[in-house]
Amino acid sequence: MSTVLGDALQKALDSKKNDYSNFVWKGEKIKDGDKFVQKSEKLVDMTPERLKQCYKHCEKMLNNDNPKHYGRYNVLKQVSEQINKCNVELFLRYKENSYLHDERRTSTPRTPNFILSLRDYMSNHPEVKDWSKVPIPASGLPSEFENINVADALDGCIKDLGALDKQHLTMTFITKMGLWFTKAEESELKGETNSNAERLRIAKEKLHLPSKLVLKFNEKGLSYHEMRAMLILPKKQRYSDMTTEQLVTLRNKVLFRLMKQIEGHIYSWRMLQRQIELVARSKGIDLDD
Image (cartoon, rainbow, N blue to C red; front, side, top):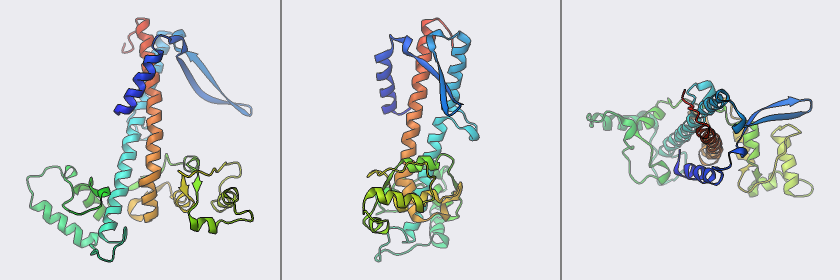
């Protein structure tokens, strides 16, 4: 766990550690007619067996290594890798001078030019065993590319970065980020009233969003074209087949927002796990039995 998460967790625990009666386990939300209900149990009222069951569930939600139901730590790692792969593909487009285009910069195609230079560099350093720990041999690069390693760059050259798994980038998650409008989009989505409310209505129609979905204006959200680029992404899309706009939006905005959400989930599960530990200790219960 990061220091920030750990410090926040400890501070919250310190403020409640002597008030175990407030520690509550909330069950799954179950639909009851037109509403969803959620049952809750006080940790202090649980049997030892129930406490152990809940504790194991927390552990599973945090550390499960089943790809179909990854724990939050593994999802966080997966998202970090996705950000890196977006960055690798953008780096190769930078080398080709299609990203951050500059007439003064020479274009270096990934194949065969750049891949051959990487191979030459690797053959000249036979002592290296793990190229994933070696930065790419280049100078004067934008700072955004300073952490790219040789192994990833080589995978990108042969289009072997794989595909983005969009499992966690749901329509709800993307649209909750909200919309803002560039100057061009303000004109493009101009309605009769020339208001952001009218633009949101028009954008919602153009994006073919459900009528019940609430789309809000948010200056920290996505632009209209960024949101459209995210919504049209298929469930799995190869990084090499994405548009540059999709790669930049994922790297700079969407995936970092997802990481923040996952860190919030980790905080909540770790908090609950620690609360169970405190209650178990007060009752002399060994959770590892």
